Image (spheres, helix red, strand yellow):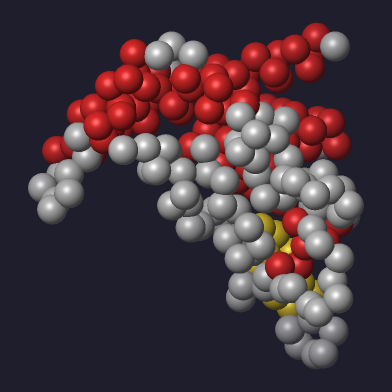
Length: 204
């Protein structure tokens, strides 16, 4: 059962209350924290800026329900509604110029608009910068680092093979080879940037 309890916006609720990390961390333990953090790894890689409180949820799993004092466990729902991502707003005719600009993808990942909805603290007025959220979460959950590394150590070849195969689908609006190259470049660039930050943090 989806329990988006922390996403409800009640009248008088402090802005950002349901998005802030401080509030969520007390509910995340063990595998639950790994699932939650990996969702934001995905968002970072695909440039998803729309993980607002209606686009993530928590699941209650009842372990024993013989009486009113049922034993339940709480864990994040699988990532859903990832549509605002992969540079969907970039027009096809602009892609040649973007692909020719080696620094575009780095600028895109570090721009003022490259932010998650979730915030570091309830009083924050803006979401966490795209590349800073996962390293910040790992400061609180260092044991999850192997899980994060497993998500971001794929090869360029792997993502190119997967995305390029989508161009073969017979659909009214097919994925163009140019768009596929753009998507691959975006994902791989963000992977490299995130890995660099994680390595710097490990050395610090």
